[in-house]
Image 1 (cartoon, rainbow, N blue to C red):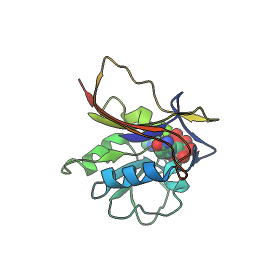
Image 2: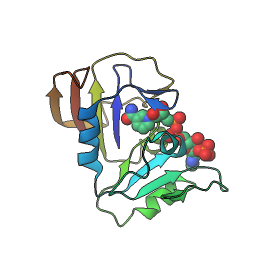
Image 3: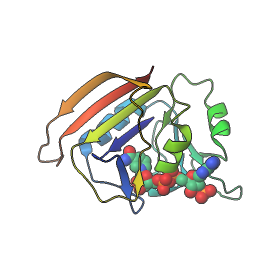
Length: 158
Ligand SMILES: NC(=O)c1ccc[n+]([C@@H]2O[C@H](COP(=O)([O-])OP(=O)(O)OC[C@H]3O[C@@H](n4cnc5c(N)ncnc54)[C@H](OP(=O)(O)O)[C@@H]3O)[C@@H](O)[C@H]2O)c1
């Protein structure tokens, strides 16, 4: 699972990301390129350019009549997991609903902490520290392109 969150686990507002952070987009691209990405249909809709290149794009919707082009469509998390069972690593890329559905099924969490509070209407699920070990943490100071300090954390399930 990979996500960028504000200080209160904010994820997005009005079906958009919280802010534009080229450093985090670059990190997201580095981590996910070559691997399947699984997302909810709201997140799919929100992508400015779709599909995400060099990745299998898998979209989850409950709507069995939904037709999306340039991606694979599934209707349950089980079907999504079945599609990628032969893959080395796959990424759950949001949004809030899909993170909540998968949070107890995943083994690794890439979390970018944005050092700010945001107006939001969707939040990342609570992270229970007893379930996760922080295995890597890298700090990036804000600059002219990235308006907030960022901490890139990687957690593994205990
Ligand atoms: N900060 C980040 O890293 C990050 C990453 C990704 C997204 N986001 C943000 O998150 C927001 C979108 O999140 P969201 O929660 O509104 O939408 P979402 O998780 O992207 O998609 C939700 C959709 O998933 C489908 N769904 C719900 N329950 C399901 C189930 N049990 N089985 C199968 N499909 C199911 C439904 O589609 P149908 O209605 O079609 O049935 C639902 O509308 C946006 O603001 C986006 O920018 C942030």
